[in-house]
Image (cartoon, rainbow over all chains, first blue to last red; front, side, top):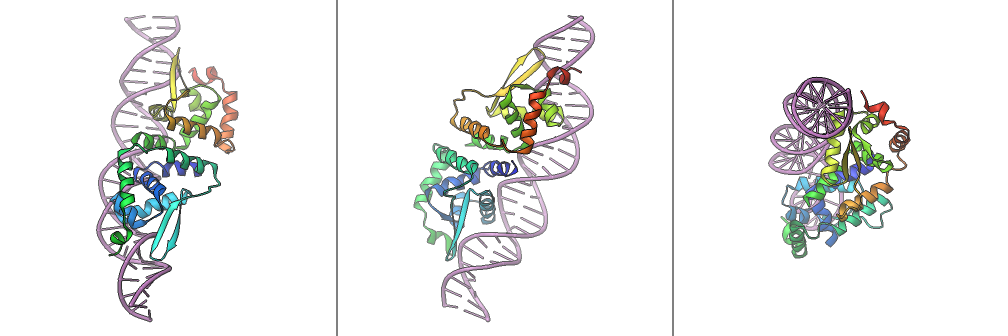
Length: 114
Length: 114
DNA sequence: AATCTATATCGGTGATTGCCGATATGGATG
DNA sequence: CATCCATATCGGCAATCACCGATATAGATT
């Protein structure tokens, strides 16, 4: 029960839902997400930790970057169903549509190399 | 988007999930829920308000009592799906099982008439 | 090995939330 | 119409959370 409550809490935040919807497009690193969300890098990192802790997303280090992506082939029924619902939801939302347009234009190299 | 976030928040609380699972058994008034949850009456009332506001439950005044029940034939896809998932979830949980045993024994008259 | 660079973690702050006891409300009863 | 009773609302308190800037970390590059 506590684990599912933790999942509902993870899903109760606008920026975390935006992240999940962004990851539907493709795996993204922290700085890409950060650029779209327009919050502090530490905040993006925290949100990713919350989503990862409950099993909604996973990460994979690749050279300089940590790529985050939606969990695939999830065994947990509850998490799988929630991901399915989220995939069907929010697609008409103005912010989500704008985010989606941005994520398709994004160029990691121009964003992330200081 | 905000409405769905509100729904996730409503689902992010142990006592509110217990209420939803209790209402799967039958409609219940505040004092019955109260007796099972063992929290202050005002707290139970607050929780019911939160669940009702997002459309997960409804209420109907009948003589002295306000009966709360799970929303039926819900048009909103998101709410309907969440109710479906909740119906499938938590059934192995110790607290939920105990609550379920209690709700089948409960006698409104012995509980609610001061 | 020294230095970059992307990301994670830390400490602090304001906002939100769950809880309670006390009180208000409003429909039912006498 | 006065009273009763179940429920709703209010005010206050402690815990949790999202946010930030600053700093730590660790893998990649030189």
